[in-house]
Image (cartoon, rainbow, N blue to C red; front, side, top):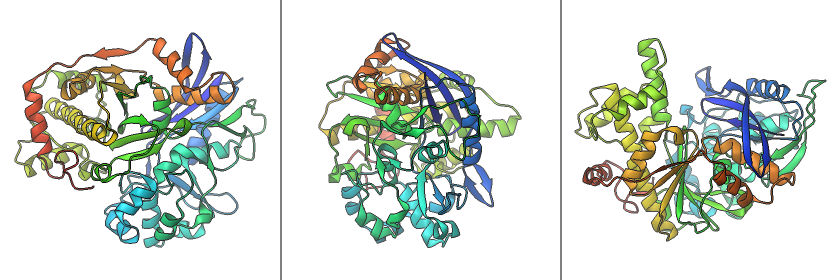
Length: 493
């Protein structure tokens, strides 16, 4: 039995899994909240609670052969020389880095940074967080001796040797395209080299459960495997992409990662202007992609509605009412910076509509529908950019993750792009986590073997595009929004 710990923006899950030629079967054993908390005016992650919850999950999965942990990228913990936390790890949505990109580019030019790391320019990236902490003279940074990304920290607390797994390390914007820390980026931004541990390849066995933070009497003695610990990397491992490379993946969750799998990075001027990212994948692959704001938009709407109504509205009800609402009432750019940290997303949408001379949505149903339509339009924009950057003609889209359950959004995506959509598995991240563990322990041959099991395991849905002229008109409106433009014409973000 394998155990996958999957950390998401709303919750974390501990999943047990079995693997054989009949497929990969997952069973959720434990779930816990992962929402950031406000501490002294900063959004932080309660990683101590995460650790305790993981131990509870392991107690519910006796007999585990191995354990792997995946989660979101960019965020990290700073540790003192004795291994204690210098401060609670910040959430990437904390306002510390707001507006930091011009300062970053004064230290290292945008073009040079992209050539060295290949990573999308986003103020949430680790290098931006460290630079902002340095400029703010944060005591935690001065006290720190080591830095670990969140999945690596939690694996270390279970007993693993410290290290920084490659796929997640690439999200820091400090890892070179060659897989080593980019010394010139570290020097230019003042990041001490001694903070960063060695880079670890996905699939590395890094110890077994035990150590000071694991209570005596814990029955689990499983191997600790460094999986593709960036959740998108794990999700793509479990995406049954065709061998010809003519498909796009959308890993749909709090963020939507829209990309294609390549054997080499693309760091030319076009990719820079489109703000694409070259994230490292399992087996030396590259995920050429763009981070799109994703289902965070619906999550924040739902939180606002709960504050107004005193109760939660289910995602199913939100989507059902949106599907019946009038189409194309307005369009917004999901990647607008105003959405990154908003506490009142409906109000933010109304303000953006007013600023672009569009009528704000008159109802919740119209609001939710226009957000999903706008997401589908941003997907089309990104797919066009990826096609040009990679010199590939895409013939299909494969949606994985929680968003693959949103049939309405899947159909909108097919309609907006004119491409057929295959949706599933919804548990792609945990599945990819398990596939890497199974390869590391000799139970699967390679990623292709795991993908075949996913493809034959069923539960995949298919959506054919419905051609409508109004999608073309909506796309013209979308590209005319401030800061959008056609792919390649837009200024580098």
